[in-house]
Image (tube, rainbow, N blue to C red; front, side, top):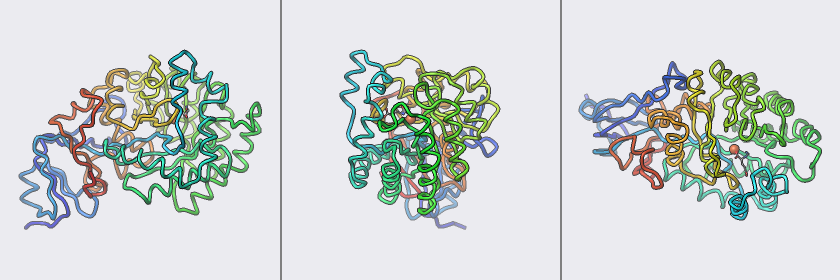
Length: 421
Ligand code: NIG
Ligand code: FE
């Protein structure tokens, strides 16, 4: 008996399932489990994966309205990019030049540039302008294989401008196919009107901005994460705790920017608060690495950021894996440190500078990245029941992804069962 389905992909030279580990992310030594099938096939119906197996079996069993012949190609889950600052206006090309001449990121920030320069541009922009500037970035990400992306606010830093950014994020979801997870990052920097009064800004965040953002997301029926830039000279650990606990009281799951330039203990805080992820993790202290091995918080490495800053120190990924942590990868796409729209380039960096194997990098950029935004049960792997978000590469082996760099190996993108690229 043949079964009618919407889509049958068949004859894949390699099909990478990237299975969940006991229903969770791939932790420790399990990272890099791909569940490779040779001559693989996958049946899709109503946007979901119905069955994965070998071509002969599935071709005999299913009659499909649409077929994709993936002969000679590797097939893998769509990339999940779990950390971006994609909604912004303008650019900071001039700061890039200043950094090459020797200024540091934090020097530029203290002089009123950096994040606050993008804050000026975002405050002056309309929501339509934010949407119009962000849409092409999302379209390029999709062509490069990203099927779900997390997007943070954080360039508004007052209630109206943060809600405007959130509005832009929600509108973008309705305008294009990439799945979007929204994060409130009102605590991205201290805005100029609060200069030297960080505690007063934290009060305002806790009393006004966080409740307003949570109410707005509830009104739109959208889940929302809450993030903070826990860093020397920005928000310290006690301030970060207040901000994340306040968000949690309003139903917002914590995330954190920790250990980018200084190890303050933000990662340990994230684990203690049950944050869904702790991100950056360059200067992470041994106790914090150990905590990642014990807790549920996913460690998100962003190698495009040190690369973008011309730094030579990266996330101690091997130590995090050895401690039993769950490691994910993201672009951190933003106009200051890393205007990188390609998860493929992030994989190339991660293999070289974090010393991940190509299989580990692939699992970190798909399954574990999905868990870093709380969506691991629905996306991130090619397992039956999950959303049919997948990539067909113009390459015979998944390892070509990290091995080759600077181009785009994605031939087809299927999102929610629809072939869109
Ligand atoms: O993740 N570190 C803080 N935030 C961003 C940079 C944002 C910016 O410079 O505009 C980051 O690297
Ligand atoms: Fe970031």
